[in-house]
Figure 1 (cartoon, one colour):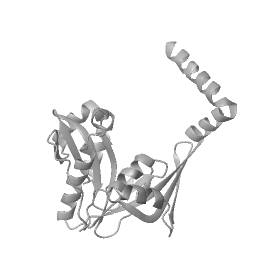
Figure 2: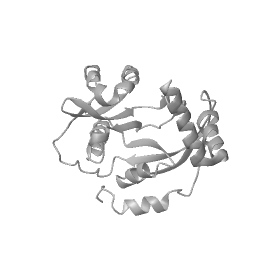
Figure 3: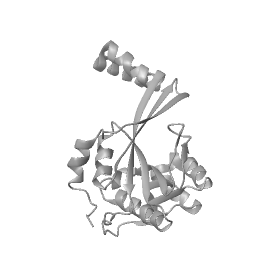
Figure 4: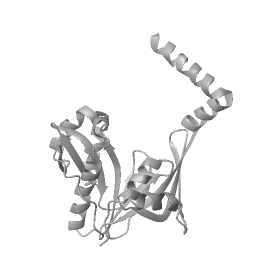
Length: 230
């Protein structure tokens, strides 16, 4: 009964905060029609890469089946997905602190079909790989581990002959865009729009563009980018 009361109380609070039209709009965009705009970014691995933080608080390695129990503390709900990704031959790079996986970052050595979030294929070209699903546990956010985990993957993919890392970022996720521009990513001139209807029907459209859409943001943070000119 208490759960029903809390649920009704939450609806009332949202109604009062948003008003009738705002409340209906939120319900519509959450349960009826959702849309996301993904910007494609590319990192040139033939340039000098950022330096590691130099900290020794964590161990960085590729995820294996034996590491899955150590994901339980921070990423327990994702373990079944991690198992499936490993079975597909994808590479998970992890950061470990005190025997717990506190950061994870995935790489697909070839084009990747996302069955979990966007239900579409992200196609990469020869000498490119696709990176996705980076996550850091709350206590370690801002510590520098996110960069170290990615650097481990970038260097290993370099050794395998890859020249570019490709990723897609939600266009409204400004903090993530800042971070990627800061470490050297640039726009690919490509956008993917993913629309979801009633939580189960997906419509995807890929678009090309010539003029950079985030030039001002990229220029601002590229001035402080970690990549050093050769």
